[in-house]
Image (cartoon, rainbow, N blue to C red; front, side, top):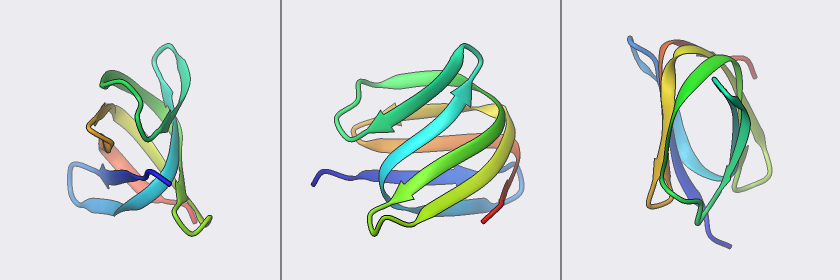
Length: 87
């Protein structure tokens, strides 16, 4: 199974980083789901949940706002002014 490398950062710290199966986030134009092999992407992040499905099937949820999400070469970066883990 192909995986993603995911990094969630706020203006102050790295919130979470690791391998994942999928990332779902809200953008300015709607919700997007990212899997390995997705085309390169750069989008404005809308305030709300970023949901990451880890390789082991676990779920990581972070609240993020005021930032962007980018994907290239199976690497997803979520950079937000404010972000913190929910569970």
